[in-house]
Length: 199
Image 1: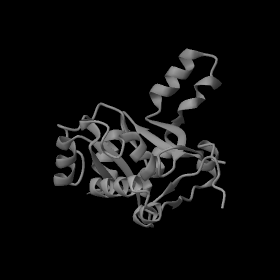
Image 2: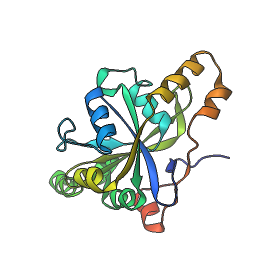
Image 3: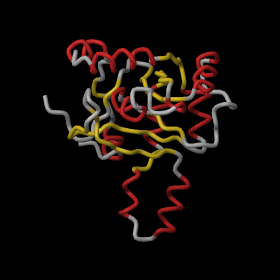
Image 4: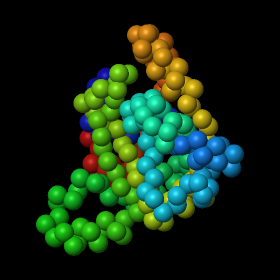
């Protein structure tokens, strides 16, 4: 079945949705110990990007091998209410071109705590696909909401990334497919479908 160009696909249940982030040892160890992110070492003032796509996270982190700041892969289960709040309070990054008045755009951008990017989804070899994966950037008031209210559970999936990468290097692609999380379409209401320009 052909996947629409823009569609949120994720591991989710009736209460939570799973997103991924890659961090250094210090932040990962702290998050796993506390069940959420604590400052320090987590920086509350920085934009933090969450990604429902496991393979896009693998692309971004190079299977956890790109650098020491992204060598630990975390799966974060957040509340669906929080996730949908983020979507409701978001701005599509590519919408800048719709504004001829730069000052107006910057004012809207500053007042909106969440950025949305639709980037090409990745295949098992991390090559771009035709359809897109959503990346959600949290800033300002969205960050404390994320760490203090939305996060329900954090687990480490670094070993999963390493095992999958090893199988891909051996060209055992069917084994990888059985190993990876099964991500399915996340249901959106009409308002969010329009807002996120999903097709």
